[in-house]
Each structure stands twice: as C-alpha cells, then as structure tokens.
Length: 293
Image 1 (cartoon, rainbow, N blue to C red):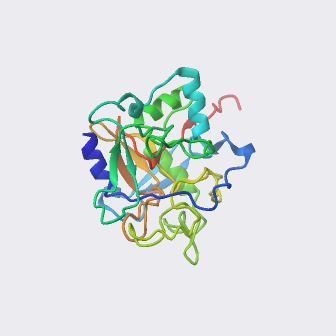
Image 2: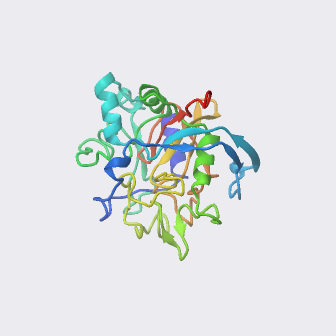
Image 3: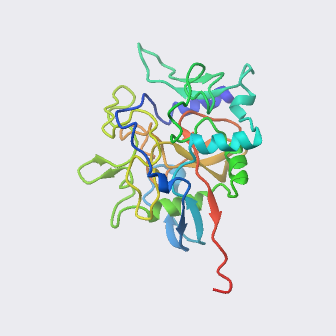
C-alpha cells in the first residue's frame, strides 16, 4: 500500500530547495492565533476543473474557528515533548515497506522522483541526515491523517471537515476574484507558494521558494488566514474512501501545466496512515456558544 501511495503522489506534483525568502514568516503575535469564521452559505466545488470536484453544491456552514496558519514544526514538537507521540512514519521506519514519501527534483533522466524513504520523518523531512534546525516555523510534514488527528485532540481542537476548510478558503479570496485568485494576483504575480515554470523540468521559483516556505510568508487572505492555498496540502477529517482522508489546498508542487489544484475546490486523497513531504494540516475549534448573549 505504501509503495502504491508513493506512485500516486507522482501524479500530484514536485519539490525542491528553499529559496531566498527563508527569513520571512508570520508575525510572532499571529502564531497560534485562531480566526473566527462566521456562519454562511457558499458554493462547494465552485468552478470545478477536475471530475472529483463536482458537483457544485450550495451549502450552509455553521460558525467555527480555524488556526490562522498551518501547524508548524515547533507546535508539533511541543506535542511530541508532552506526550512522547511517535508518528506513523517513525513507527514504520524499520519496516521493509515503511517510511514516508519524499519528492526530489528529477535529475539525469530519473523517472521515479517520488521515493519511499525509511527515516524520512517530521524531524528529518528529506530523510536521514536532514533536520529541522532553524525551520521551527515551517509547516510540519510527514504526518499522516492519524497523526494530525492525534495532535488536534491534544491541542484542544479537531481537524476541519472538507466543507469547513473549503468554506474558509473561499471566504478568503479577493472580492470578485476567481478560484485561482488565491494563488495568483492580476498580472500572474504569485501570492502563494506553488510551482512556477514547466513542471517538473523547470522551477523558476518566482514566488521565492522552490520548496516549503515558513508559514505566513505570503499575504493573509481577506479573513486573515495564511497559506490556505499552496505550501503544503492540508488534511481534513472527511473520508475520501476506505482507509483514506480528503486533503485540500494544493502545495508548493502544484503547477499551471500539470496540477492546477491550488484552488479552494480542489481535493485529493491521502491514506490514513501514510505521509509525505508536501502534506501538513491545520486545526479548527468549535465556535463559542452564543447562548445568553
């Protein structure tokens, strides 16, 4: 199953190295902040581009709160320190079919850039010998949906449903903007961490990054959320099918010519106990009770 999942990732996109904007990031006073999302209606699956995004549905969504940014390495490290938790990638590191998926830019005619790497974990995101020193505000990766749910419960929250996630992302789009406005401003100026250039041969990194970016390096959405589009895919609690969850938002691997999933409506699947170098998450909390107010 794990090797099959690695092959499936090859249909999503690619990664590289950090760009010159590594010092950017979310303001310190916004770390760990939750944004209030009001109740309302929206069109789920608006302007679908791929079959799995259909049908378009008008839905009502109740109020909730969502963390302004993706869960960071520092936040996940606090969870591990407090609980001793081991991720799925860590638990399976010694198994013949264990580890986590890592994408490296193809070189020399390499036809299988996605690799199942034993020892690729949230602490060692590119595999043995790598580390997260100096990357505490990067989004945590190599976490499975099961790992993300465990963190969310410890943090007093939960994973968002797909509907909640998409609703929050849609509210954040510029007024009058189309579904791709979350990735590009007028004039094709990148405003999210995606892939610029001909994928996978050419990574122009016009957004300043050829790989993951620290959370908050790009402008917040209209409701104050960072990196809802691009950077890393985000895990939801909505089942995709047996043994898999729905992920949203695209990643730094999504390109215009190959994977245009840097839109609120876009969706993909993620095995419940599998992880990768371009998948992370954020958490939500229920809105405070309005009774008596």
